[in-house]
Every structure is written in C-alpha cells, then in structure tokens.
Length: 282
Ligand code: KIV
Image (tube, rainbow, N blue to C red):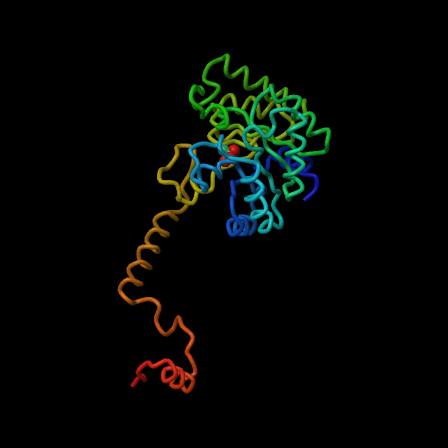
C-alpha cells in the first residue's frame, strides 16, 4: 500500500482509530490481515516473545529480516511496518542502509526508538522517501537495560516536557506516526493534540489516535496479563491442553488410528510380508 502517511493522517482527521498489532510469523499475518488490522507490525519484541532472548537488545537485522519476510508473505491489505533493531540506526548512514534493506524485504515503513536525539536519523530516512514511525516513552532497547529508568514515562513535569518536546522534534524531522509506550494519559493526550501525525498508544490511554498491543499478550500466550493489555483468548491453555492430549494419545496408542493412515493394497501386502519374512495377518 502506497501513501501510508496520507492514509493515517486522514484517519486521524476523521477520528477513526488506527489499529496495529505485532506479528512475527506467516499464519498470524494471514489472520490479522483477514481481521482487518490497519497496521501489521514486525516488532523487535520478536526477540523476547518468540526467539527466547533475554532482551530486545539481542535482536539483530538478520532476525528482523527473517521474520519480516515470513509476515510479508501473509499480508495482503494491511500496512506492513517493521522495527529497526538495536544499533541498526546509530548513525544516519547506518540507518539508511538498514532501512533500505528492510524496505527491500517488503516493509512499507520502519519504526525506530528514541526522542529528539534521533532527529538526524529520522530526517535522513524521510528525505530518502522512507516512512518512519517514531517511538517514545518506554523504549525497551535502551530503558530495559540495567540502569534504565522506571517504566512509566511522563510522571514528572520534566519528563513530560521532554516527551512533548521530543514528539515535536520528531514530527518536524518527518515521522509519519508516533508510538507512545507507557506514557501517562494526560501527556499522551497533549502530544496527540499537538501533532498532525497520528499517535499510536500502548499503555498510553484512550486519547491516542490508534492502539497497538503485543499479540502474544492479546491472545493469551504470555504467561501473565499485563495491566496495559487485554487478553482476548487463552491460547496458552488451549495449546498446552492440545499438546498434553496428543502426548497422552500417542503413548496410549489412541493416535493415529486407521482413519489417519493410508492402506496398503491387500494383495501387495501379502506378497511383501512373504518377501520380508513377516507372518501374514489373519
Ligand atoms: O516491538 C514491539 O512490540 C513494540 C511495541 C511495544 C510497539 O515496539
């Protein structure tokens, strides 16, 4: 889909909420596309949710490209956004090279974490014609590291002003969307009202122009429920129960049955048994 920027700004102007979910694989992409999501997003949360890493900082460009290509094969209608992993945008030149690789692999836009310090990177990408989504508030690539600050952002006047000023700088630099993660409600509302481009909240309250959730939280694969998420299904329970039943059925000889198998021609079977010295069935 061309022209994500125009479409999302039109949605904001019309007051139509923008829907976005993380996605890491082909079958989920097909389901989310069928469900009518506006944005399907290959987040670097693939690292902790799918790859078993301890933190987003371990995610590489190779990881992102691999999962992006799988998701690309499943998306027909939604806008496909991808995260730039840790250290993949540390200078404008490095960012350009990596963002171009992600676009070549099928993404329509890239998201990157950080506030006003990312101004030159955002500008370089936007000037190259690349759709850029900013991400401020809680930024796991930096704040989840040892020494990172508390999770909810915007609680002090100083932190609120930094967020608001970062949003302004990023918009001027050329972002087309801005993710607000774990930002207090009032600050998210101020940013949303100030910007022309839409804000997409996660744990930032209902005033944002759109919402994003981590899919494994929403479908109930995560072992715990986060305050900021809503669990719409209990896939963890359903799948664990299915795996347990399969394990029990195979061990007890209840699966597979003849109904799950393909019969050998009876005359061939007699010959084969004779040939290989097995007793004939009665
Ligand atoms: O990678 C991710 O899941 C994200 C969302 C929290 C927006 O960046």
